[in-house]
Amino acid sequence: MSQAGFSKEVIDVNERKFVVEILHFDNGSFVSLYEGLKKIGAMIVSINSGPMPITTTVIPAKSESLFLKLVAEKIASNTKGVCIATASFERELDSESTKQIMSKIMEITDYEQRS
Image 1 (cartoon, rainbow, N blue to C red):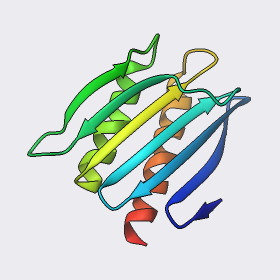
Image 2 (image 1 turned 180 degrees about the vertical axis):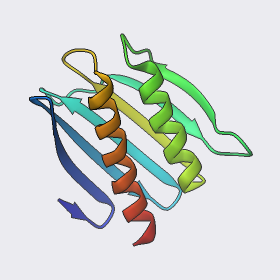
Image 3 (image 1 turned 60 degrees about the vertical axis):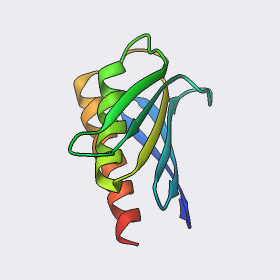
Image 4 (image 1 turned 90 degrees about the horizontal axis):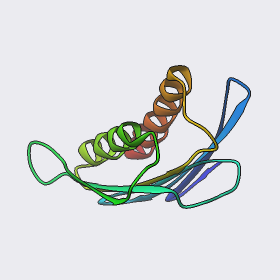
C-alpha cells in the first residue's frame, strides 16, 4: 500500500511477518519496522551532511543495532537528508530476514525518490 508520502509493506520471511511503514518527506524519511505488536523500539537518527552520514542512537537496541544503523545511513545518503529509523522485533533476525527486509526497504525508498 502506498499513497503520497506514505508506504506500508508486509514482508513474509521464514514464517515471520514484518511490517515496514515509511513516511516520506522532501528532506528524508521516518522508517518504522516491526514484528508483532506495533511498537516504537530501538531508534537511530542519521543525517547526511557531507561525504558520510552522521548517526546517533536515540533509543539503544537490544539486538540488531548494526542493521538499524545501516538502514538509517543508507536512506539518509540516498535522500541526501535525514532518516529516523525505529525497529521492534520479537526475536533476533537471521541473515536471510535481514537481506530481504533491507532489500524491500531500499525498493520502497528508491521508488519513492523516482516518483
